[in-house]
Amino acid sequence: MNISNLSTNKMLFSTSLEEEINFLAFSNDEIFISKTTIRKIDFNGNVIENNEDKISTKSIWMVNRKTDRKKEIIKGGEFDINDVYLTVNYLYYVKIVDEDNDGLLLENDYLSGEVWRLNRATLDNDFCFKVNPFYFHRFLSADDSYVIFVSEDRIPDVTEIVFYNLATKERAVLKNVYEKDWSDFRVVNNQEGEPDYFIYKEEINETSEKDLSYVQVLNWKDLIAQLQWG
Image 1 (cartoon, rainbow, N blue to C red):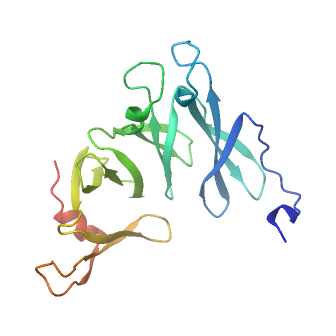
Image 2: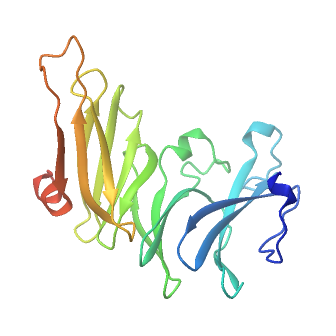
């Protein structure tokens, strides 16, 4: 039996050939969905001749699966949305904007971006911080006070785990260097999707100076206390 053979009376959205719908995040009652539209006119009003330069812009919708009520909570504009992260109180997202004002959203724009958050109770949108100088790759976790994300390719052969304190506007970075002190790691979240502890294990091989690798755990508060902020 194929998925297409299933039947339901719940139809949340329809989409046309000019649009794309993606599932972003889920809670007990709410579903967050993006609708992507392809623009053939750039932000400066010029026709985009090169298909590779056509602009994707997104809006985000929230659907209550029990009441079927849906609302556009982030209206589409002159930006794209790169990634989202859902917590108890907020929906964090990365807004990709035209940094160099060339009218397009190109690869250099997607390397940076701005982190915003939507208050799930009031639906207010607030700017949090610019990703620069880091290259945003993906969210790891977040809560009301901190945002944690991965930065890749800014420094060759280095993964950066970036911690941002929303109150003090300070950053801290943990570096993970390929083929030199590389560790497997996870930020483990609690049932509410917020950071609980950090688990890591240094990778060793026949060229390593160490004979043993230990699985180690740091509680979230202990991790925050050890980081070098600035």
